[in-house]
Amino acid sequence: MPFSPCGEQCWPAAPASSRWRLAARALGLLLVVVLVLVTAPLLVLASARTRSAWLSGIARLLLGVTGIRLRVRGPRRFGQRGVLVVANHMSWIEALALAAVQPVRLVAKREVRGWFLIGAIAAATGVLFIDREGLRRLPGTLADITGALRSGQPVAVFPEGTTWCGTAAGPFRSAAFQAALDAEVPVRPVAITLRCAGRVATEAAYIGGRNLLGSIGAVLALRDLVCELTLLPTLAPRGDRAELARSAASAITAVTGVAHPPRSGGRS
Image (cartoon, rainbow, N blue to C red):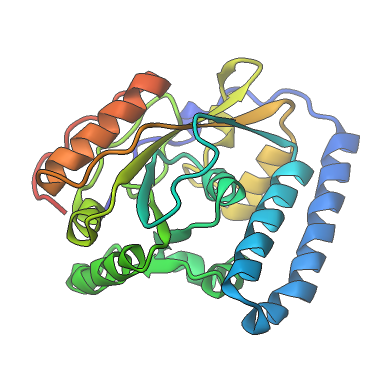
């Protein structure tokens, strides 16, 4: 199981927050949830292009109503064909940010399937769920990722396997990179930062004992939260998966300034 030592000790003292701002954002979030509940059932009748446009639109709405400003540096899209998108991981915010740039098939932990509303949306939009404890199922999951990439779909994965606070980071697990090698598609590293007033917004990280609702509430209370995505040059599917993982981690570290240590032990 991936492990992150990040917890409450990473959060700064909570500043006084505006009740009006919190209430307005909570109302906006509720309205978007209602919109999702009304429109999501129609996705089964929609084309793939319509589902993609819906996903990007909802992601942008959710970022907007929660007060998160999205900035994108580099290319405006991950790729025109199959590409494995890999990014560092701090929060649920990154999934929205990636989808807002370009709809992707996200690889997520199996537990997300059971989250209220989010799980249903994830399943409807083609999220690939992975059982982090059932390693015997990993070959099947990798086969699904490889198939999606071969069919020309972009697939996004967080190789750390769990969330970190943003001032520290975890090693990149190499298993998903094998799918890019097998499908012979490039890897697009994406460096993600969460900042408030120029500092790393560790309080926006989904870490420690905080549940999803608590994390959403903490984000709603923040002022001037900026999520910046830097789309880095693609890496050719060459070498072995461990080498590809190291190259992606190094590229992201060069932007964030936070090192991803090498992983000891096995290769998965």
